[in-house]
Image (cartoon, rainbow, N blue to C red; front, side, top):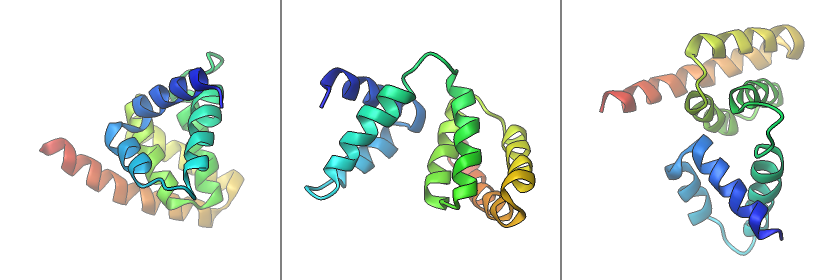
Length: 129
């Protein structure tokens, strides 16, 4: 493992998803799942998200579309939080999911909107605290 890339990835991951999410993910890692955490930190968050070629807001937009099409609601909620941290608006998220409807299918968009509605209800409730 490239420790410098892993550490860079952990920093990006925390900046995008937040400390609470990352702490929970790493706290729940065990001997079985730790290799996945290491892979996520080093390659996903360090080698790719850590590149300068796209701003984080753009990466978030791409991720929301891909994860919606893959129908991964748990990951979609995590990346909705990241998208908010990266400066996206609720209106931009809606536009992304409309694009998903056309290129990825209506069922994917329906589920994405449903998941986002749940996320925004929680997110807005947290913001009021």
